[in-house]
Image (cartoon, rainbow, N blue to C red; front, side, top):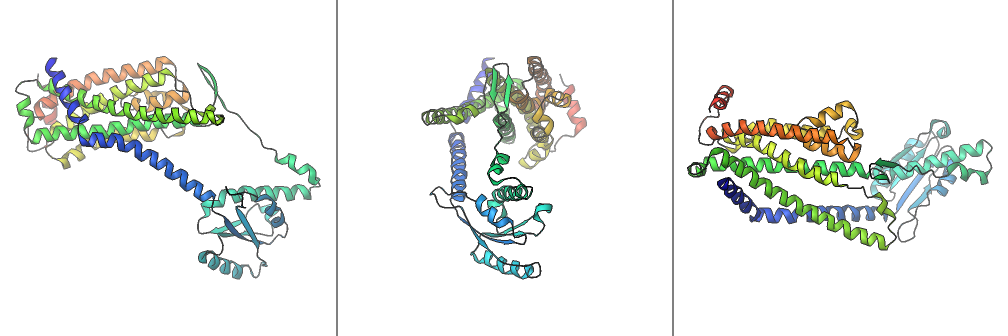
Length: 423
């Protein structure tokens, strides 16, 4: 046991003190913060960009009302939309569209709208622009309201009664949890995917990194020297525990950075009124406990599989090819987590998939914030992962013991089966 701990400590210290570990630990939160700030800056810049629209209204009824609807303001108080009417008939429409297309390409207009004569019955229109996504949704919503107003007016509804037909309706979603009810507008789903995505990243990144370490020691013959004083199983478990500790350390640092940013944001929001604080998803103790347990079990499970692959190959190219089936298991779990059944999380299929040991670290971690599964399902997934881990480690140790000292041709399936029969 003492030798195993010495190997684990060596692996841990060697990785934690490396420049790559330090740089990546600091760089990832910095990159994520920079990305968020960049998106916010781009979003604000697009909101402060005025739009000059040309409108061809073949119906002759919608444009005046549309002007009343497109009253959005920029942050400086100026109008967001400037509308210019363009006269055309069904016969001259193609020529008018060509002229406006050239004007848009020349930058004189942001885009142009074509409102057909039957817009009140067809409920269709065309928006032409170099970037239809930029203002497309806003224009669609305002145009819908304008058409509805005209139809109500034609139906004999008095002008002063029209606003009541556009009254905003706020449906509050209250999520029921054992700790009580809390407003939920999708933030719980976002939390689930953040946790599942973090596990996905760690399993693949550190799994491949660990396998590369095994191949490097094998090809450099370092393992032969180490195995002269420690068993193959002790070397395997020491390396796995050391790398797992380094990965957990990095995850804790990232979590602490996220917690500090969240605490700072909460203080700032509270001082400013704190209206959005109610949208923060509740993070109960079960989420913390489950994340740590699934982190450890998932890492040990996949690291053992990657170690077995690393012990059977002798080059980086062979390593990538042989590791593909293991990597596909992680990728499959990650993509399954985005399916509608996992977004609900209560179907029988979702329950069964989240209990499969190779999928459980990601899928059950996604289900816990979303579906609040009963504790027995969570405990069962822990037990199944632990039992599978024990079996996998036994097989991996046999393959590792033989393969770590062998070089040359990669063993085929019959040879691997013979390795497993060795005592």
